[in-house]
Image 1 (cartoon, rainbow, N blue to C red):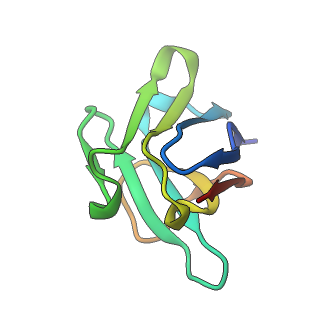
Image 2 (cartoon, rainbow, N blue to C red):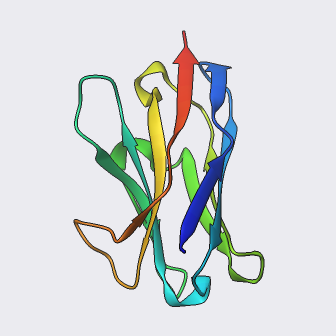
Image 3 (cartoon, rainbow, N blue to C red):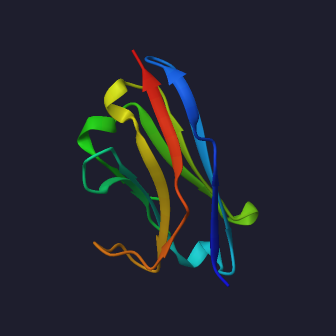
Length: 118
């Protein structure tokens, strides 16, 4: 079974930082593109960032310069470092995996809540 287990959510004041972690099992991580998505209350799920098998990074314009996606294939871990958090970042955050970038991703984590207070 493929599992993406997420940790690192929580509540933080505006301007603070959190690091999300996604522990991946059941697949060879180096063969997969990884992504982070988020879903705010009353809104559709949106793309946040992705990292390719070769380590190239893309991200949502509103989080560039604040969020950093990274991966450690040896540890089967993917991270989202979130700095300078804003109330607008409040959402449930999900990690996702597939062998290539998609609008629809094959595997998803359970989601973790991030709440940013003003």
